[in-house]
Image (tube, rainbow, N blue to C red; front, side):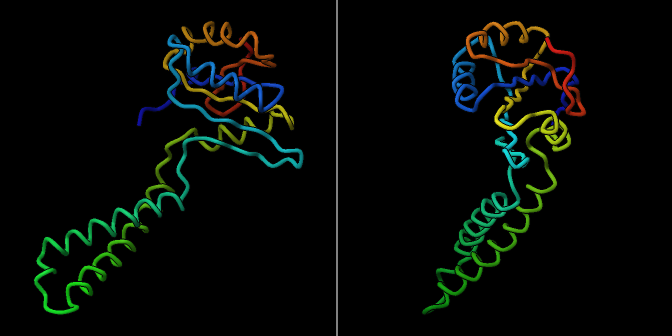
Length: 178
């Protein structure tokens, strides 16, 4: 996976979640703005950080891996001739293969989801959440070239009561506002 450049992540802070959702829907309809990845970061009144992004959890990886492993093992047992076994032997062979394949797939899926990061770096999001205030969510977007996209994003979001538009440093701290 390509490493993010220092300046290809843009943070936009909104006065409310409702306005953020409308702005994101609008940005997705604009052809000139190509969003590679997006996340919504908000701080609850009790200080808890809420993150909505495209990162897989270990549970999601385990479910996907277990399902795929069980299916592949069951079909593998059929290919190896399990249906030719007499009586209930075919059911036992296919079921046993699916069980073992599902368990191995679940372990593999959990491992992959835990150690392969598909979203923004956790340190970036944690540092950003420290700068947010409760009730003012942030839209974090990764674009191909921030230098060419920053003016387009700023122009498109003029009517959405944006509180701050700033590039995110690789540490997750906001740089000087645009």
